[in-house]
Image (cartoon, rainbow, N blue to C red; front, side, top):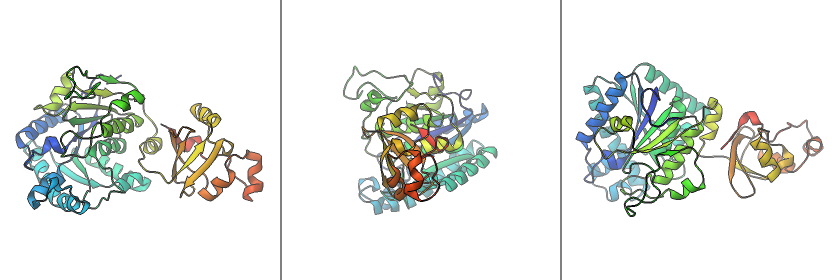
Length: 373
């Protein structure tokens, strides 16, 4: 079990930096602070660790240059324009600081669809692998200039976790404006205690999370960080939330006794890690209690255990498997189109041929194409 993230623990590490840390309230890059982060990255690289940066800040930087209100977030159109303008300044900043330390930067802009579509996800993974093999430091951001409210990550916390999956990274660091997860809001309750280690994200942990960002500049709050931890852990990567308000935050993290670490148990096969990290699906299959117990033991989902199906999925699409209480238990690839799935819900295997008129596949969702959450 990982107590804190060091080069020895994580040969490949994703570091996410939020807007409120990178950009000051006037819309300028906090150059002196960012220099200490780059110094830390250089030290990690010298120790043999590969680093991927997920950097926010494009919208905030672009808003200042364009004179847009509300930090560029007054409308989707403003955010897109600010992102297109600010991304140039952001990439130039990173390239210059990394180059001064003898490191080469590469920029990758991605959308939600790029990582939800299996083929494009594999293309992104191959690009990351090649860049890291060449000794390059990838700097990644969501492509906010083309993203819409319907198809976007919405925050770089979850993007960082998804990138960790694609890059097969062992760890994710979320530099935040708070030093981890606390039992209560530390700004309002002086008795709030930091939770140093989370071995399992349960209802209690989720209830602690706060949905709003304290700075108002970024888009992610504690709730998004908890979700990012779930995504990272699903791929076998540990995730730590730690304060970035200090200089040299990565060096501080390496010394320990700060932040909150969400541990991961082992690793999953690449395809199952991709399934576990999905943020979208084409539909849902609702199941009964007996099927839920069978899935927990490693069984496939048979039509007999399904109560209903909904959505617009075709065979091979990703669907959610939902229990009677509405909890999403698993993600899986549907073996049937929606129309046929609806027809066979609740039927035993021997009845399928007569209903469908063709030789059926035994499982509605096979265990080899399913991952429990």
